[in-house]
Image (cartoon, rainbow, N blue to C red; front, side, top):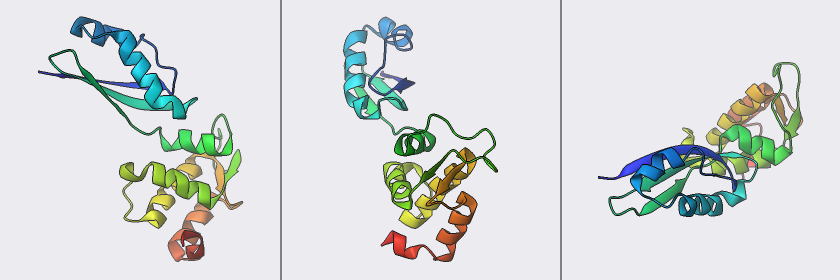
Length: 156
């Protein structure tokens, strides 16, 4: 019977701390697991990444890496450290609709929308809660523009 351990690690900087209590008793080489996680998450440096370590009865392991939360991807795209403390009135950055689409593609399987337009609108919703404008427009207005078809040319 196998075991699955789920952790959130900083991309490329995992350490034994949160893993050792679960991996040690299973007899798995913790150093090897940490090295494998760091190799698989190195492209997400500076972001929190969900990781799943699956162990089998023979002390073999498989690592699955999820995508960072949409907020982390947005912050990385536009180079901000955190969202706004008052997202309705204080805007902390601006993201292009192309960058929104890029985040939507990265999060594709985690989003509910049927197509790129709908999935991008979900990412715009995250921008709303973060205080990030979209192509210089309040994210609530950007969402309306996407839904109305006014920005359809941006989705060609």
